[in-house]
Image 1 (cartoon, one colour):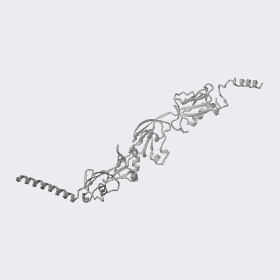
Image 2 (cartoon, one colour; image 1 turned 30 degrees about the vertical axis):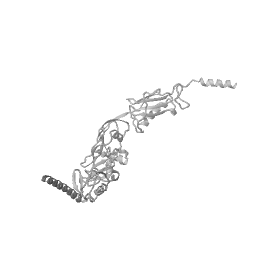
Image 3 (spheres, helix red, strand yellow; image 1 turned 30 degrees about the horizontal axis):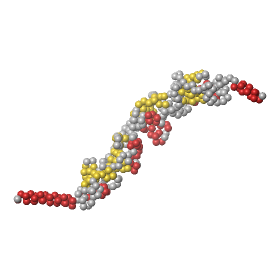
Image 4 (cartoon, one colour; image 1 turned 135 degrees about the vertical axis):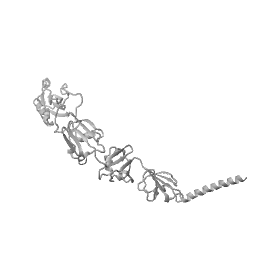
Length: 386
């Protein structure tokens, strides 16, 4: 008896018609089953997602996409050129020039007139694109298509970054009939958000070149360039701000001062040096050498070590006081030969140090030559008498 009653109740429950309007659902839809009732019905054929974060200050306009979740399922709708959004089975609402939160509220008001508010969700899933231009002292000037609410730093990155001579303190943003001057260094060094302004469609960003008569030249194994001199800036700051230098990973730096004197350092030990205008900086990847020749046992190159003098390289090459003379040591640099004090002489990578033969060795050579010459003459006289 009880079994029969249970079967009757079950048949009544399962034969009840489904509510096609879903005006007041009792459970949150799972979007699975029920004959595909909750399948996505997009009007686009590719995945929709935001590429950048958008805040509530965003102004909605034609071309934006919203995703709407209701008991009927998913719909992805686009704002029309007139600023309208048409929601299936609900009607149309105008959202043009509304802030994002206002636009979402207008859409929700339209939807809750038919559906339970608990089961309505609205989100912005794609914004319209905009075109801006970046010109001047950037690596790749030109026009760029970017997302809404893109800031100045994003367009600078798209332009390949600043040129070494870029004047970051006086960037101009031309907007309609207005020109905004931006000190971008405030953003780089102090993180001031107002210096990283939000761009608008049609903006033209112009990065001027620094007007400076003084420069610092930087020579690397792959390129030569000049960067503007900045008072008080250290070698490390110049290297960090010169494009492409960090990737080279140089070990040594040769600094040629305006007076012509040169000094060589390991880069990590010289980053705090302050440079003068018109200084030439040369970077090396490989270990530098000094060349030693003349009256030494091992003629050739020796690994450069900062702080060593000529006498140190000569001694390491195997000279003795019998064969070589320390009084007439010479150094050849840039094709010029000059006498130096081996105990004090400045030695730089690439220098050629030459130590002449001692007087004893020179006299011995002359004596041997004269003896050989006299032997030849005597032999010739003897032969001629017979």
